[in-house]
Amino acid sequence: MQIPLHDAPVFDHQPHDEQPLGDGARNAMRAYLQRTEVRLSTLHRIAVAFVSGAGLLLLLPVFFKDEITVLVRVFLNTILDQVMTLDSGAMLSHGLLYLTLIFPFILSLAIPLYALYLLLKDVVHFYFTIYSPGFPSDLMTPTFALSGVGFSPDESPEAKRRILAYQYQHSSAINFAIPFSPERRKAYFDAIINGTERRIIPETRTYDAVAATGALTEETDPATVERFGAAFGLARTLDRQLVEEVATSEISLVRHILYLRRMMLRYMKTLMMFIWTTLVTFIMLPFLQEDRVPRFVIMAAGYLLWAVLVMPVMRMPLNWIYRHLRGIPDDCQIDKQLTILEEQVQPYIRAAIVSAGVALTLSVVLLTSS
Image 1 (cartoon, rainbow, N blue to C red):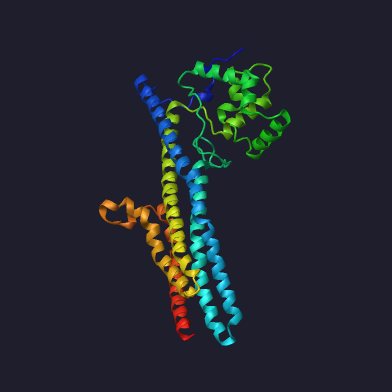
Image 2 (cartoon, rainbow, N blue to C red):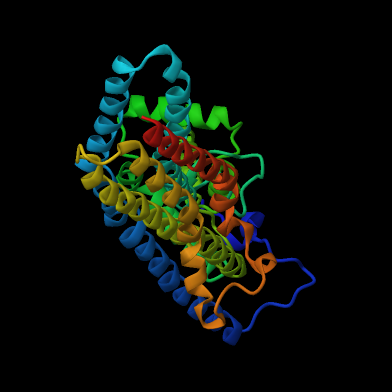
């Protein structure tokens, strides 16, 4: 015999001291949910178009071209040729020159790659999370940042009961959601259920809760119901009330915008870093491949130029944002999440300026004394 849904307290989340919402309020919430779906879809299209797809593929060919390999080869060949002809007295000064050049050279390659590493990390953080509204705070299974959307029980308790009955009384529906063989389904979901101490199963998807709605039959396997509920938990799909769904949508919009703005700005900084490093390499290569030009003087001057301007280049996207103010009026109002890359690499860049300056001085001194 089926139990009427209104007799099952599992979906009753509304405090008893609150007045039921009128039709106008409910219609406004439904319209809002439609708008948030469009906005979330737009945010994800931006991420896919400019960062995770063709955007990242644009960065690598710009940087990993033959020019970098040629520069490394010229640098190593010049050092090896000089080492073979130097006497012991000149070895110390030339060794210091090599060391002061190697540091900005390695840094010019490391900083763009580090920026790319942070960008890839931002992509993962944008799409995945270990926290979801409505789930236990100590449940930390990785999941997609966009949670599933269930039909709100307070919209129509009878409709919700029929939805549950369709889901659990048709084996094809369960097989569609969890398309594993019986053996793998048991091993996979039982491991997740036991590993999370059953917290992965939403409260409204436990066997007792679903059975209380009258949606199950006597032939329904309790273990299958639990595993099906675990699938809903992995997809972070809850049977939320309409108010809870609206609240979750607001939170989701905030989360996606916070991550997307940092990711997009990081992408622009990374692209600028790749372009600036590649441009300096393009400028140096013709001179380095000419035997009549002092190579170490060119390299030291090139990396000094790179180190001096790399911070303004990295800062350029933020300056574009404030272009109508002719500069950033107050750094304190800028979110540190948007400037974390500059703050992390600034000490190394200052050291590179000093190192490249010493290398330029040494190379000129050694050139004039030879």
